[in-house]
Image 1 (cartoon, rainbow, N blue to C red):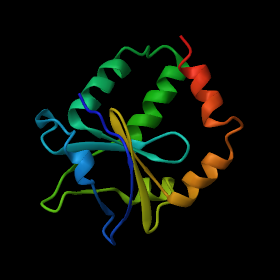
Image 2 (image 1 turned 60 degrees about the vertical axis):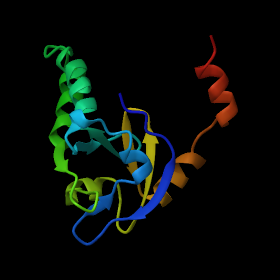
Image 3 (image 1 turned 180 degrees about the vertical axis):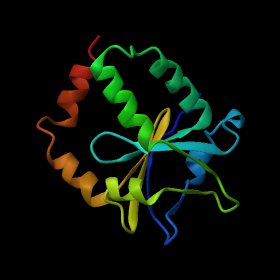
Length: 147
């Protein structure tokens, strides 16, 4: 089970590769076999799942009904963007151009660990996202963590 956390500033190279930070790599299980699945996320970021975590997500997706139009739409949009990438010898993964364009990523990236997956953001888009939030972190935490 992954436990990704923290944020890291990196850059994307001319071939569309980004480094997976060492502090995140240590949480990638051997079952992932250094393979990641990259797809579109929410709020104009990318989701990067180690293969074992992606397999768990796929099990949930398989439970969605093919007769429900919302379920079909979600599956199509998530999976049409999904691509596998193997960690190379310099601990980089290749992100396809269409995904980089979707996320508005050109040079700099913000990499955020989110427990079972990693989010990759254009730092300016992430800052703009934070500014659009109507409630403070404390208010949201109180609502979300209320028992």
